Length: 110
Length: 116
Image 1 (cartoon, chains in turn blue, yellow):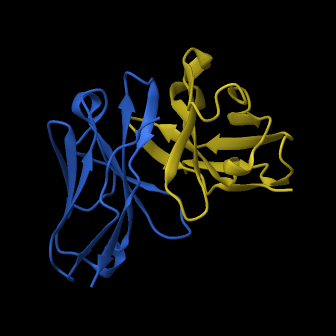
Image 2 (spheres, chains in turn blue, cyan):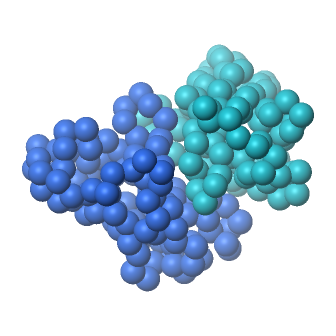
């Protein structure tokens, strides 16, 4: 099953803003929207947002999500050391009747 | 406290079977979609299977269709994944996850290694 496209890595300086992207098609991101998850090494994923711009419970306002067409974006402002992690997008694909994930973006905070 | 705890992982030979369990607590088990998601060593997340309340809606990833079976016992608040005809490429940490708009609660995962 085809996945969503994410850049493998992004590096940004401390206190700067990072924008991560996730590209799908009209059957997944463009239709159902995308969710974003954060995963620190050795830990399970943690939901950040769902259906594009709904922040999950307890998530900092520094994390905001949006969508334009078939591309979803996660913006992290005021980068902190603890933001260094892998970030995954996911969406329900109505043509596959399956959930699909992006390959993940490793965010490095310099 | 809402939590999900997986068990049943281990080291098995190719072609054999294994059953994973996931015990949930802190929420009404039967009201939510429940998933298995796996992550190969050093790899990304791969969705495996989904079941909805009462098992009315079950779907599998193509990579496991016909070999894996997802089920739930609402009386025990337990989700299962029966894995048959295991292959080396099934080696991964297997997570169970609850769905409420998306994968909002995850277990800690259980490791499955398929190796001869």
